[in-house]
Image (cartoon, rainbow, N blue to C red):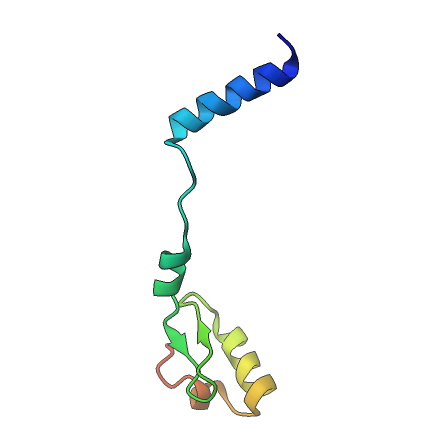
Length: 74
């Protein structure tokens, strides 16, 4: 038995242990898009840091983060 056959057997064992195929995170990511720019309606993840929001507001709209994201916690 060559190394290729051993590797394939290991892949099959690991797949059986793991429960098959990988799960998609699309629904989870969509649920985490809680911060919305009031001007352009672009969505941001809830975990987006304030400097990134400030950068968006300055670069895209020449406004402050408070004007674009009034509901975002500081």
